[in-house]
Length: 265
Image 1 (cartoon, rainbow, N blue to C red):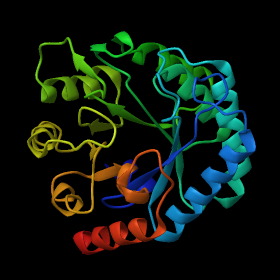
Image 2: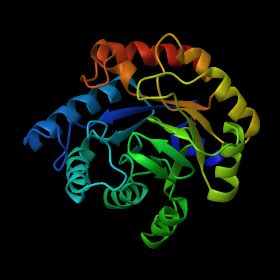
Image 3: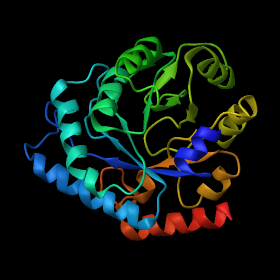
Image 4: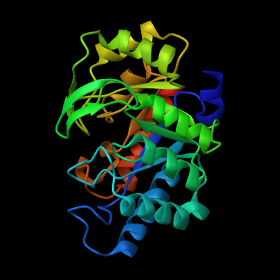
């Protein structure tokens, strides 16, 4: 917990910079500079609102892959490199859903933290989905990034676990056997809320490990969630009209952070 709070502060809000569809993916429109500009506007709006950290993700690269195209990873590195002079808060990365690509991107860009599905076995929209913590952490070691703080999502979106253990049991195991720095609890899809009882159960099982809500945190729920969770990751709630694929709405972002500041006292 001490390392977590040194990086993010107390009860942090980690805000998503959702990149538009990247080269090599079905929805890419051929205009890389437009992706940079859209990400720049979102980043500035989030920083102005006072978020504690940002995370760059390829949320628009649908349908998602378990082994991501090199062009997409290279494009993410290019975009983040263009935006680094504007960064005033810690930043992280998440390449959906490829832990090794996420490690490579973090090393190339100097990210402070990374999020992924590192553990578990799932039946998913992408087929059979297997965590790769052993490979990913050995790759992190080879890349000399032992300092990279890892957020383990233990309830994958777009998927159902094939493991019969309970969510708290899987969360404890991710910390004990797979060296998770923090644990994330998700709803069933991007933008859909976390069940509060799931957060409570995982936090009870891991009282000394950071536990964050990973999806679907909204203005009307964030104060209640922060009474249980050690922080939140938020994207959709800060977008225009609350739609995942829209741009960040500065007024929504500022209103969200005002609620958070009151909740944190």
